Image (cartoon, rainbow, N blue to C red; front, side, top):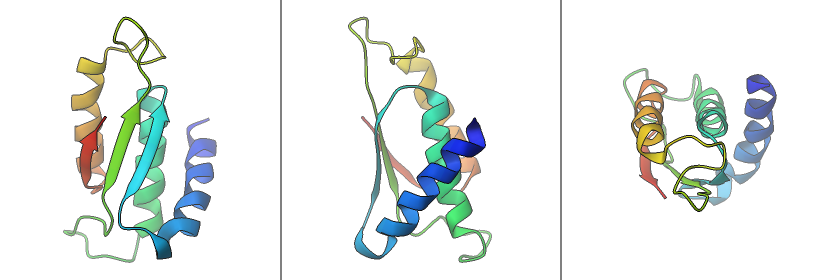
Length: 99
């Protein structure tokens, strides 16, 4: 499932690349979905940049929250955000905001 999501995001990333300044992963329903978008960005840039560089275009992630303030998956947004920041950093994706 993870790889299927990564491939789906990769096709969007490739199509938008020449026309954007920032990527927006919008209305994510769970941490896994946001991580798929991060992995797709990371894979897209493989071989295009030096190992120590961050990727060229940054990423914004927005989650859809339920009435209890949790992500639609039931995950706590307070617990998900630090995990997302760490995951993006490990993949060299500049995460400039979580909405």
